[in-house]
Image (cartoon, rainbow, N blue to C red):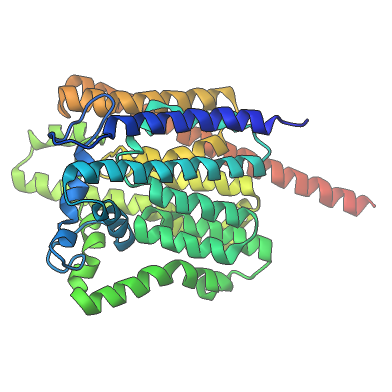
Length: 412
């Protein structure tokens, strides 16, 4: 069946572009006022970014005197709007425009991916859900998400060199893309027919790790080793905090155990969650001889990548709106059934109810926010279960097909 791509794409892109233009209209012209967090705007994170690039306004190098928790490419991306003007008002407007451009490009690349799977462009309307459209213009995560999307498109076209290199560049902007590398590597092994030894010593490892390694070495020589490693050390030290469903239980523990015991328990819990985060990617990498049989098609790459991201998000010590920007580009590529569609719609609405409505208006300790956190957790678990079911169903079908083909070959 021939799909009316031009018409559907025009509608989906028009909606996305309309949302972007509406957001920009709220930012123009720049004028002096206090940062605002409301139903349609979220200046809080932009104010954080503005403070983080104080090094630029002082003529310093990143992390030389002011430690910044973002990787180098993320810092440089946040610095670009400061080239327009020194004031926060102009920085805010330029940053929204910059993020809007990244978001629009992300929508276009997702459309390319949908076409490669023969899917309708109407799925792009998932980006119009308030959870994604509210946050993407006020956080810089559409920037690494765009690199990941382009790298995925190149991977599925078997342009492996550029794909792994862009994935490495994405890691320089945000650390989470590194979690996807074992999955993409297994796909490369199957398509190229390489041995598992190539995964440890092959050029994909070099292409993904080299951008970060070279950057860290150069930055360490200039500003110092500890300063260069600060973004990664800072993230590793995160404790359980707002937005995590575990806060409900840890708050109770604080009332029944001593402060010293509570601090120890929180430290162990945070480290345990971080171990669970990297557990699946680590297993995929070290036990690749076993797992490579499950990642043979582009559909497998989508399902396993989404599973890794969902586990990463759910086991993180806290919950942040930026997770939605990481997650949503994968959802149009994954959803097939009506129940999965309802899950996406629910996540796209509940995320907005949590931020900014419940969190900003009632507080992180309120009963309203607690109820929304529990609902969001249930939705995440349901989506994770759907992804796991898809993976097992695909694996079972593939094994059945292989047995059927082997029996036919034996009969012939």
